[in-house]
Amino acid sequence: MPASFHPRRLPHPLPRLLPLLLGAAILPLAGCGTIRRTVATPTNLVSHQLCSAAFVSHIDPERFYEEAVVPDVAPVKGLIRHHVDLQRQEVTATFAGGLAQSRAVFRGDTGCVVVQGPLPPAPHDQGPRTAALAPPIAGPDVVTPSDPRLAAALDHVFAQPASGPRRYVRAVVVMQDGRIVAERYGPGYGPDTVFTGWSMTKSVTNALLGILVRQGKLDMAAPAPLAAWADAKNPRHAVTPDNLLRMVSGLDVGDSLEPGVHSAFDVAARAQFARPDMATAFVDAKVQAPPGQRFRYADGSTLLLSRIIRQEAGGTGQDVLLLARRELFDKLGMTHTTLEEDASGTPIGASHMWASARDWARFGQLYLDDGVAGGERILPAGWVDYSARLTPGSEAIGYGAGWWTNRGGSDGARHRPHLPTDSFLARGSHGQFTIVIPSARVVIVKLGDAYTPYGDMAAMDRFTGEVLAALGR
Image (cartoon, rainbow, N blue to C red; front, side):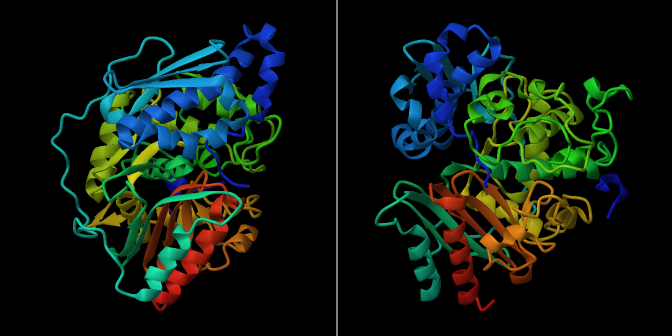
């Protein structure tokens, strides 16, 4: 393991918003910053997500609203109104007749952003693009499986329950040895459609950090290079990027794992949807435990890492765009990918990358191949093993360093018994998955919004078992 990164129930993009019903009782406090941001959170979520659906993904925003947004804002749905302006490429939303108003605008290469003050110039990639290192994973047509067992497995994973929580499966890709052996898309979607990855974006943040480590710009074991923490007397000075990536910083940076009555006021939720510069919400976070001693899955940790990425990439959103494209997406052949940034140019590295199912599979293949693409090392030697290694304290869910994991005797593996013990996965809210299985040389991607227990884990576990059986693994 390189010295530069020596390390000392379910993800969701926004905790459930039921407590926002309290808003009607606290309107007299609307001038308070916390209350104002709390009320703005669902409104900004609606405008941002619909903007990205309409202008990044180019899918029907109203269908997306019903299937992917309403379940997150259901308790206050009647208080929210929205309008999609196709000509101006923006979406507006209001809450409770104007208590909160929001406007999200499409800015090209970095997707959509909620307007919360003056915006800097939009980052733009003027090319030329870097040639792909990795070989093609399929031709232009959808790959229909030749094995009837794989076809049956796809039937199962796309099946909608007769009753109970809905499962809107939109895309599934199965890849073995770097080639797609089976894929399927829901009506209206295809190989070029881009989909939100939600917290799978955290695994992309892991890759960008790895690139910076390989370039000698970042030491994961050194104090985090944040100016606000530079003073050795600052109680946060000892926190390292590794601590943040493993969610063991000991800081009060929110709780993005378990919904509850507190969640509408959670700092991580408000930061992602109600602040123009998201990382600012955490630079003064309260110290609750020494670094490395307490695990807490929280988007705030990844947003701090996102600020570090912007800083070490060069300091601007333009620098982040070029780092992500030239050093990662282009080299992997990920041509249908948008990593969104906040208004300050910091990537929303906890939740906001949109990519095609094939591009998510290409990303998973990089980790299957130990960080190498086409013979070129993208990630440092040992980085993949480091990423998939179980973080002490996370045994109940099985978390590594920006990836979920079945390694290390994780108790969390009880929810995924058909996944081999060497497997690890990028995982996002409502059932987004990129599963990497080195022993079988298999990558599985599933995208769509499912509202079943454990983020559709049972269905994906069964599907993985069926796929591996069909492939003789």
